[in-house]
Every structure is written in structure tokens, then in C-alpha cells.
Length: 154
Image (tube, rainbow, N blue to C red; front, side, top):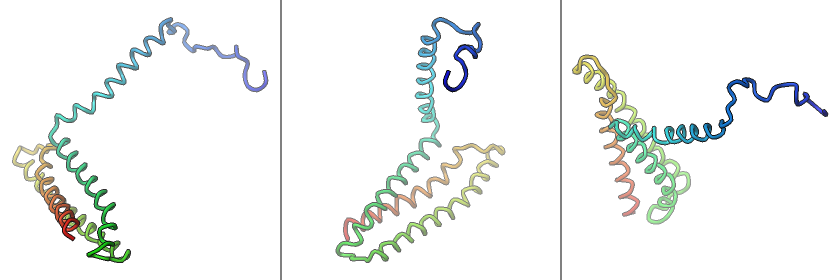
């Protein structure tokens, strides 16, 4: 014994009566079942419209935002714009303004949800927020369309 305890000081199994001869096989079987259950479980969320629509809007926003941030410097520093690096950076103030407009339209969305809840007997449901998502998705689609049109035409 160099360092530590002797090998026989502590038992190998803390509960010998629960040890079974085929524990490895049972573990593999249960692990496969657990893994498959965890793999399939998120797909059940596609049955809810608020999850699907919100997911599409979020994916569209992330993709369009990444595309905008990656291409804006190349587009605006070349002809016909010939912006400086500072002016190109200031263009991102438009994105800040768009975020403020989106936030401002999100605040009345709570009142819309409350009004819809009163109409349905005081029950708030997640699907009621889909009405407020329509305005923000229209703003985003219009903004990204105008960005693409400006990038194409110059």
C-alpha cells in the first residue's frame, strides 16, 4: 500500500443483496430506452402551434440577423456606397431602432392577451400570444426584405 486505503477496507458493492448477475445487460437495455425516450420527447412539442410558430420566427430572426451582420460590412464598404468603417458601424443603429420598435409593440401585446383572456372567461392560454407575434414577424420580414433589396440594387 503506497497511498490510500487497503483494497479490502471498503466493500466493492455497498448493497450486496441488490447486486445481480446481469446488471450490465439491464443497464444497456434501460440506457437504450432512456436514450430513445429523451430523443423522441422534444418532437412532441411540434404538436403545439405556439411552439412551432415561435420556433420558426426565432429561427428566421437568428438566420436573418447573422446574414445581415456578416454581409453589411462587405456591402457598405464597396461601391456605390463607399462607407467608412465608422459609418458602417453606425448603420447598426438601425438595428437598435428596430429592436426598440419591437419592444414597444411587445408591451401592448400583454394587454391584448389580457383582453383575450377576459373574453375566454379569465383563462390565459399560450396560443393567445400568437396574435402579438404577427406584428413582430411582419416588422422583421419587412426590414429584412428592405435590407436585401438595398443590398441587391445598391
